[in-house]
Amino acid sequence: MVFSTATSIGVQAIFVMVNSNPEAYYSVRELSDTIGCSKTYLNKVLKDLVEVGILVSKTGPGAGYKLAKSPKDIKLMDIISTLNSRQFLTDCFFGLGKCDEEKPCPLHGDYDDFRNHIVHKLSKMNIVKAVKLGWPQLIMEKRE
Image (cartoon, rainbow, N blue to C red; front, top):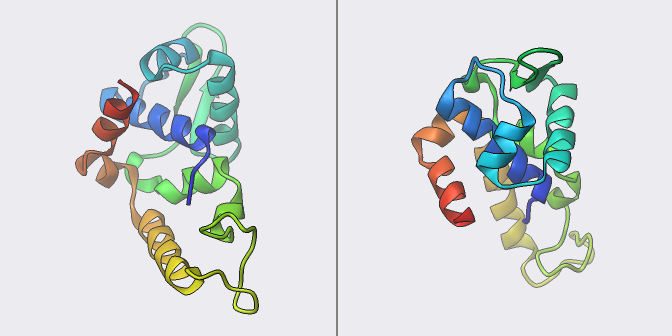
């Protein structure tokens, strides 16, 4: 189960917002400098999150993006399912495409159980809990 670069960047941007001031607007430049990614790519990711109601955007003076709702109401799976292809829910562990009960790979049953467990956890975990568990620090340490 591998998540896209867009998913990683989107989660990082939201963690930056939550760790700094969840009610403030953040410019693309500010977020891209903090995360260390392209402004163009980040802007596309943030627009996708606006479309599903995770973020809101503002133009003009003080333009930028901010959380559309409380961090406790944003589940990690909401972000992942917006920015990641849903294919990760069905792809084979070995990269053999879609394996199923009729044509299972050697790890099909075990990986299916693992994937379902992870999806369940991510569907229940909100941003506040992820921050408390130290996810932002892990992500930022990985980038350094």
